[in-house]
Amino acid sequence: VSVTRHHGKSTFRVSASPDFPEGPSTTARADAVILLEPSSGPFMAAVQRSSGGGSPVLYVRVDGGETSSSSLVCARSEGHAKWLLSGVPTEGAVKAGRYDRHRFFISPAEASQNVTVT
Image 1 (tube, rainbow, N blue to C red):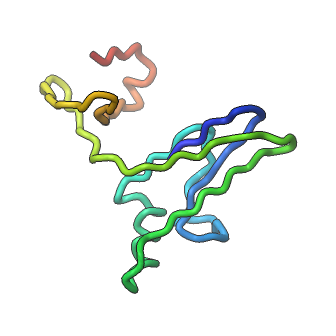
Image 2 (cartoon, rainbow, N blue to C red):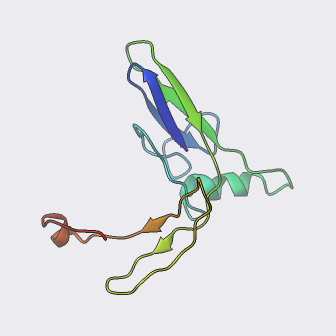
């Protein structure tokens, strides 16, 4: 889920519930993108709420703050991210106009160093 602001400032949240309760079924506020993996709390809560045979539903709340703003919300399903392991080559193929997703982790010790991703 991503939000593009045309003007003004805004943040947004995603939840499995229309009342956006604090807790695992609602994300923290974000400025641009929220990645909901199948194991994320909001995604799992939406699936549980739809156990009666309906489709899972996620809600997006955009908060414009003190001033008016204009934004565009975009949500789409993505393939699973590929894990990048240190020193292990990763291959992939991407259709024209699409992109591949990769995930890598940086330890707290590495976060204070310069890191190069190639």
